[in-house]
Length: 196
Image (cartoon, rainbow, N blue to C red):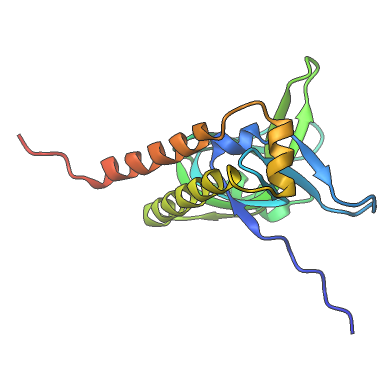
């Protein structure tokens, strides 16, 4: 009896860390082996779960529809691209009027520019319109997950922690700081302004 292959867990990640995840790898030589982005905090991600404000959409396709979306979270910007192979996601990008809160599950993609810079984008599997409360819960949960990854990578002697150490010449503390900053922004938004 063969089990159906299970989907990879979608990792919660802020834009700041996502955009720094420029190293990708496969764990086998099989043609259809999953491609993983290596998060600088020492976790592999074949799929990610992100939330933010969709601020712009544009059809950047030349021969067929190919939608680009710009999604902003408290730490930075995700660029999302959907075309004929992601018809539902492309439809949401086409029909949504920015600004709107969105939740996206998708796959990280990297591409190298002519000058050798590696850019990271997101190919969505699904995009949902959400409310502010859902966005706030995602920010809080993602901040906690990011802080946990930062705190465990220092002690972890895992394959992915070592790989992140080799691939990224930066301190993971900056991701902890940006997660704390995101939580502070949430608190500021939740606190009513004092009346004069």
